[in-house]
Every structure is written in C-alpha cells, then in structure tokens.
Image 1 (spheres, rainbow over the protein chains, first blue to last red):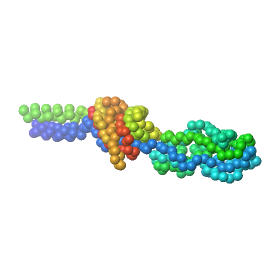
Image 2: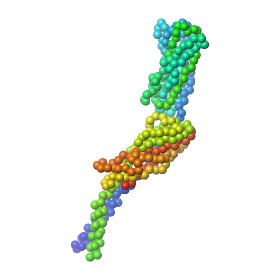
Image 3: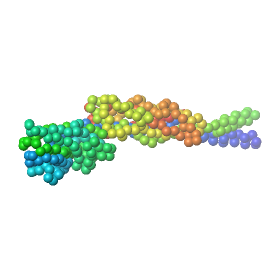
Image 4: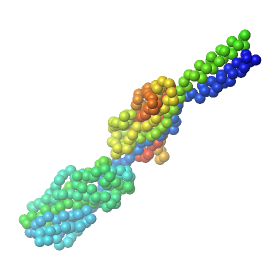
Length: 182
Length: 151
C-alpha cells in the first residue's frame, strides 16, 4: 500500500514536471516588422514671370521695395512711381509633398542697366503664397515653408535703389534663385 | 522491489526537472525600420546603422525621418544572455511598382545581448542597408522582415 502510494505520487509529480518543461521558450521570433523608405522626385524651379518694378520719373531717387505680393512701397518725396507693370517674380516649385525646401539667392545684389546707367537691386525676399508661409532671406527653418502640394508658387520681391543720376530708359538685368530640399 | 526503484528514479527525474529554471525569452517589436526619404537620381545606397547614424552614397537624403527598428527582449529567469538572428535580406515594394533591396542587417547589441536582472529586459535596435536603383521610381516603399532571439 505504501509502495503504491509512492508510485502514484511519482507519476503525478512527473506529469507536472513535463508540463513545466513544455512551457519553457528558448526562442522567440517577431515577424512582419515593417521597413520603409521613400523615393522623392528631384526638386525643380520654373520661372513663370520675371520681376518688374514699374515706371519712375527720371531724376528721382530713393529705395523702392517690391513686396512678394506685387506691391510697391516707396518713401513719399523720394522715388516717384508712375505706374507701369508692377509684379514680383513668380516661380513654380515642383517637389515632393510635405517636404521642406530652402530658397537661396546666391548673390546678395544684382545690377540692372539701360546701357549707360545702372541701378542696384538687393534685399531679395520671398514668400510662398500657396503654402501660406513666409520665410526670411536666409532660408527656411524646420517647420517653415512646408509644401503640402507637389507644386507650389514662389513669389520673389526685392529693393530697387534709384539714384538721382539715373538716365531715362528701360533697365534690365538678371538674378539667380536656387531651391533645395532642406 | 523493482517497482520501488523505478518509482524513485521517476521521482528524481521529476523533481530535478521541476526545480530547474525554465527560462523563456520573448522579443517584441516597438518601432519599424525607417530609412527616410531620398532623391534617387543615379541610384546608390543608404547605410542606416543600428545606433541611428546614417551614411548615404550616390543618393541625396531629404529630411531627417530615419530611424532604426526598435525591439525589447525579456528573459524570464536564468542566464541573461541571448543570441540574435537577423535576416539576410528583404524587399521593399512601392504600390505604384518598383522594388528596392534591403540587406546587411545589423543589430545593437551585436549578435549577443544581455537581459540582466532585475528588469531582465534589453532594448535591441536593428539597422540595414538600402539599395536604390538608377532612376528608382518615386514612391513610398514598404516591406517586412523578422528577428529571432535564442537562449
């Protein structure tokens, strides 16, 4: 009787031991871990229209600020604007949606000329009306100039520095604009 | 007498088995492997190290949205050491078509790790190398891989 009891106990405990051993897990695998990468299109800048300050009376002098919204600001009693075509330069930026981009003016100023006389244009500024975010001339910081569309409009303004000796004529010149992903 | 011997032997086996530690190891995924965004152009490669640093060759990185995959490893008892098995490669696919290969998986810790008491938990990060083909079509590429840990 004693022997039988011992035997029975042994079998019961052995069974428990097997159950314990079966629950041990010496290996673990996690499957379906996600890996992602994005390929974005190259950023491009296309000129829609150039910058035009409009018409001024010869002999007037002073700074004329062309904003990024086709608006002129002059100090009363200095440069005398008499209309003509007033427009900020307009570009189309094509880029990946939701990516930041920088706008850089490689040269701080440029010169426009009528062949005999020159006028300095400087203080380039830009705004991004489509995105509704305006950046300063040193570029955009993270969080600025986010394009939510694949294409956005970029407006560029500057300051025209008239001097009293500027002769009459049509003044033209060029400037460069560079955009790059932030 | 014979029966008694068998019983005692069985009891010995049972008890040593029952008393010994029965360690379990578990790995769980906390974050995906994100290579970030690139302008493809002529193609190239991106090495995203498990410590989170990135080096690019031939492609231009856009933004800073890259991060290695994150895992936690827990060991219930016994030796805290575990071994890490990484895949050889996987393929990322864009819905619009186009594939990219990911290989050279690396982990931190490298190959073996320790889930020491009292927490008996360890954090594991995994990076890899992304291969971008010439004129790789723009898109959001996605794929999966697996990681195994062994005691």
